[in-house]
Image 1 (tube, rainbow, N blue to C red):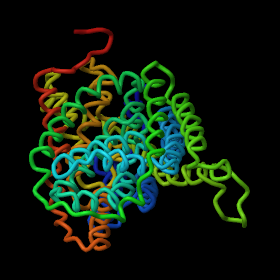
Image 2: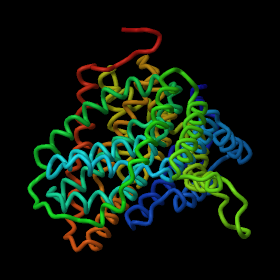
Image 3: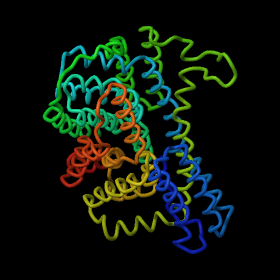
Image 4: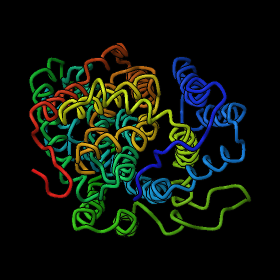
Amino acid sequence: MDSPVMEKRLEMHGGLLGGLVPLLVLISGLVWLSVAERGGTKPFWACAWIAIVAGLFFAKNKAEYCKAAMRGIGDSTGIVIVTAWLFAGVFGSLMAAGGLVKGLLWLGMTTGAQGAVFTLLVFVAAMLFSLGTGTSTGTCLALTPVLYPAGCFLGADPAMLALAILSGAAFGDNLAPISDTTIVSAFTQGATMRDVVRSRAPLALVAAAIAAAAFAVFGGGGVARPLPEIQAHMDPSGAFMLVALVVVVIAALAGRHIIESLIYGNVAAAGIGMLTGNITPAAIFSIPAKRGDSTGIIQNGINGVVGAIIFAILILAVTQILVESGIMRRILDLAERFMARTVRQAELFIIGITVLASIPISANAPAELLVGPSLVRPLGEKFNLAPARRANLMDCAVCSVFFTLPWHIVVAAWYGAVVSSSATYGLEAPSVGIALYNPYSWALLAVIVFSAITGWNRRYAAGQA
C-alpha cells in the first residue's frame, strides 16, 4: 500500500491553529462522550462528521479540502480494513451461534478444576473465545454470565476471576487475525497478516504467560459450592468451532490474503455449526417472516460491524485532511527532532503516542486509525522498521492501558456483565476499580517496552539487521 501523502496541499486560515480545528473538534467530542459513558462507534459518527464540517470553514480552498476528505475515504488502506471487517463480523457471529461459549464452558467444567486452577482455565477460555470471534466486548458479554458465577461457586477469587475474562478478551483483541485492532494495525502499516501474527505471537504469549502466573497464584481462596444451573449451559459440540479458528490462522500464516483466510474460516464455521446441529441453513440465511426482520447470521454479523466501518471511513477522511494541511508533518518533525533520534526512541515514541491516543477514546481501533497512517508509519519507515514491527508496537500499546480504564466500552460492558451475573446468583460484585489491576494489560505494556528498549523481536525492512 502507498504511504500517506505527507506533502502540504491545504492552506488553512489561522495557520497551525486552523489546521488543528478538525482534530480538536474530533477529540473533544470523543472525550466528552467517553467521559459521559456514552461512547461507541455509532455515537462517534457525529463527532467525526462535525470535525469535517468545522474544518471546511478554515480551509482557504474549499474544493481542495473536500477532495482531501474524499481521498481519505477512498484510501486503499481503508478499503482493505472495511472489507476485512465485513467478513470478520460474520465469522464472529457464526462462531458464537455455533455454541463456542458452551463448548468452552464444557471444557472448563469437565476438568474438575476449582479455585485458582479454574480461574486460570477461564483465562484460557476467554483467550480462545476472543481469538475465535475477534471481539473483546463480545467475549466479556458472552462468557461472563456463565463462567463468572461458575468460578465463584467453584472457589475462585471473584476479583481475579473477573479479571481473567477481561485479560483473555484483551489477548484476543491483541492477537486474533480477525480482531479490528489487528486488522487496522496491519493494514495501516502495509503489513501482511502472516508477518503480523507470526511476529506478534511471542509478545502476546509472553504477556499471557505472566498473566497466567498471576491467576495461578492469586486466583483461588473462595469456597466451592455446587451450582446445578450452570450444567444447562454446557455443550461439548461447541468446542469443535475452534477448528474454524485454526483454519483462519493456518491460512493467514500460509500467506493467504486476510479476506481469503476469512472466507475459508466462515465456510468452515458454517459447516461445523451445521454438522453439530447448532446452526441450521435457515439461521444463516432465509427470507424473513416480515419486512425489516433479519435474514440471519450473515446480516447480523455485518450489522455488528457497520458502526465501526462508518466511523473508520470518517476518521480516515479527518486524518487525510490533517496530513494534507501539514499538521501531522509538524508533529512528526517535532518528534524526530526532540524525542525520536534513535530507533529505540522512535519505538518508545510510537508506544507512548498510541497509549496516549487510546486513553481518552472509548474504542481502541479508532486510536490506531488516528495515529497509524500519519505518525507511526512515516516515523517507523524513517528508521527502516519492518511493517509488522510497526504494527506490533502500535497494537500492543493500544491493547494495554486501554483495558484498565472504566470509561472504555469493553471495560464498561465487562463490568456490567459482572454486576448482572452477580445479582442473578446472589453474589457480591467486586468494584470496577479492579480493572486497573488487569494482569495481561500491564504485562503486555511491560513486554513491548522491554522489546523496544532491548531490541528483542525488532525487525527491519529490506533485511537490515
